Image (cartoon, rainbow, N blue to C red; front, top):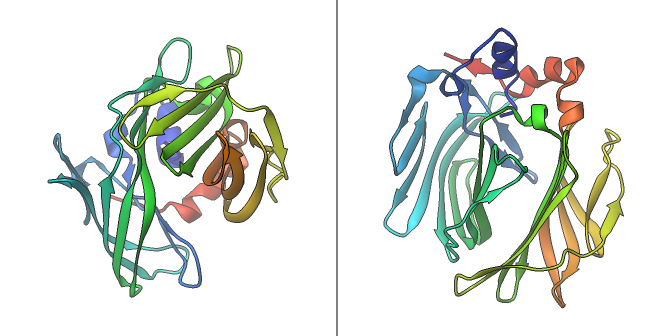
Length: 266
């Protein structure tokens, strides 16, 4: 959805999203890697349980999502190869509209689960807690939204998600959801809005409830990913947080920068 090639194709008329596919991998730390190579429809194979884009594959097998990665990072062309296995612990089976007309849908497939990472290039392996969700829509995000922020916090008994969107033609909307380990999902009153320090690109960064930045993972001209220490539903929690400025994304200079991080192959 952040493809500059897809945005350019849409400006020329109808565009096929299947011709603009990529597997995005962000590996942080001393052996950091970033891959987001876009490929055309000829490199795409999919069915109800499998998605293959070029040499990488995502497939549901038995009780897990298996992700086989074989990509080349940018800007330095180094290999990223290995496997990620995600074992969902919560499967709510629900989806939520982000806008009043219902053109944009968010699906929390598994707000909490166990992750195993086994990489050959670089040689790394670890396990921990993760989440899995999905977005789909009937219109470009920048057409209907000005910005949003989202966070997923690990709780002692499940997970909490806060999703705040600012549509262009409607009032801001907030989803505040608690997902229990037993599989239930319930809304709760969102805590007051909190202003966090702006990013180095001067993007405003906000969330709900008391929070402080523990680590900045991604800081780009239009998107930031941050690890927060927060307090939700009566307990201290660690949350993965993202800020997305679609006003900034649609700027021509940002679109001109994106191909350096997102090369395209046929």
